[in-house]
Image (tube, rainbow, N blue to C red):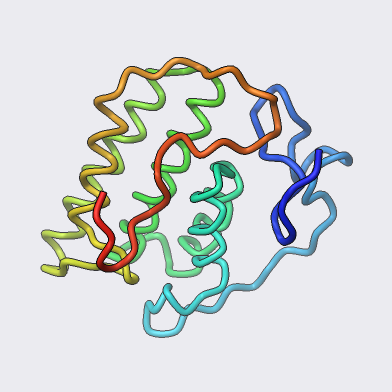
Length: 173
């Protein structure tokens, strides 16, 4: 399977495609562990954060989850920035659950993302976080949670964006 330049050759579906890290046939097997530095909680300046956004928008949900989880660890896993990242991680996990045909998991992850975005909005008082509008993220999470998901016909490994990418400043869902 071919992919766009700069993107993995396939997206991971648990139990179907090779695990990207653990399986010797995985697209990220043997890659060195990255050291991520986040200065002043400016995750929008971290390449892994931006890569997660790009991966998510193209349907590489597991891979986006991995990028954001690495940044989440770098910010210490606590506080508004970590909660925002965890919301994105949960949205990506919902995409993985669609691929697996697990609608309860899709809903559970989307509802948790919605809770986290709501919490970040209340904690920070901000309308945007890392350049992303929180109200639009809330609408996206809510929409995902309210949709009845069944596993689509998949060419396993081929990324499919099940919903629009993350809204940028000024974009509307």
